[in-house]
Amino acid sequence: MDIKIKPMGEYQTNCYIVSVNDKDFIIDPGVGAMPWIKENAKNPVVILNTHGHFDHVWSNNEVSREFGLKIYCPKDDAFMLEKYPYGFGMTPSVADVLVEGDQEFKIEGITVKYHFFPGHTPGCSAIEIDGNLFTGDFIFKGTIGRVDFPFSSPQNMKKSIKKVLSWEKDIDIFPGHGESTTLKSEVAALNSWLNYL
Image (cartoon, rainbow, N blue to C red; front, side, top):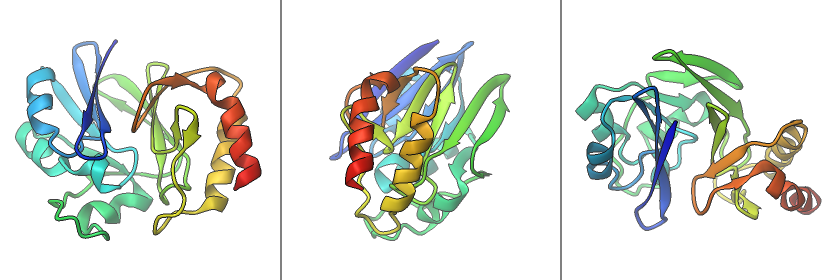
């Protein structure tokens, strides 16, 4: 397994190319992601969105059309792809597969697990591939995603933190912004957020 990371756009949103068995999974193609993906993905098979915020899905349409890829997106965030509520001029895209809650898929023979962690957005999810967790804007190194945006929910974020803290395993975390970390390393920070929310 190989993981390539490139921060994209003004918000330095991590776009990931996750390569398993010579198949490339594109996670969160943000602003200006297309040239980097064309250069680094030899066999792209799918686009996976962690959530619907513009800086994570900006290049959905362009990348999907270029390579003929399906877009997977959490069902509760799909409206943001089609008519983004903040009006930043993003080219709309349409999710081909609406992910509902915790859902597992076999894509090109590879298991892809969506873990539902709403709070930052209604559909906010983390994507597990081959023992690695791509958390979007749920968990970052040392902190969590903001819950003061339209459609955010501090109450749901609290439930999501409790859910991930119940996991009886450590796992490598690749967030939507910033450096990678592990779940074990974030336990203290997550517990402190539970007291704050």
